[in-house]
Length: 259
Image (tube, rainbow, N blue to C red):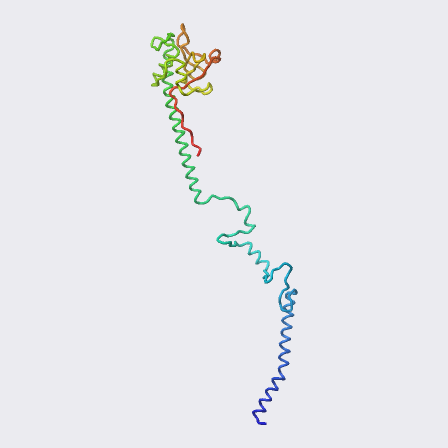
């Protein structure tokens, strides 16, 4: 046998002799690895896999407890919107006005307040204007005290009841009918006894008699033949025979807006 051939045969023999030792070393290393994994997780099988729990889907990845807590504490996306955790929901879910709608609501409130103020100012102006006319009518009627009752009289020497109130309001720039029935029916504004204002016309005896209210439960009138223009209390006979009241030259006041 030649020298090269002998060398090759010797190398093959050494390799065969060493192969069982290498295999045993690999097996020992695998056993040590399996033992370490078993000590760290007693529930794992020899292949290093944890057995599947009841109801667990295959391929489920076990999560650490702090990972789950962190997951609930952070917002999660669902489509384009964030979903808050149950802890964040509840008391914090209070209806809020959208940023764009709040200025509009404030603008509407300011506009409504401005309209209400304008309506109140207009009402005050109208009432004051009527009061000035009523004051002139009352002043004229008071100057006629002591003038005798004259049937059909419209002054200046004497008056009947309807002639006195007609001339009083004419002095204030307001025309009203001549006789009591027409005065009550053609003056559109009628008021109750609780709503009387100085200057209102008071009707008695089924619209057969009229006087002018002065305030303080008093009125002025020309009572009947043999009497003069005088001031009376609205009580007794006149209270019992009160038939109604009318307000000359009164205009309806504008309503105060609420929306």
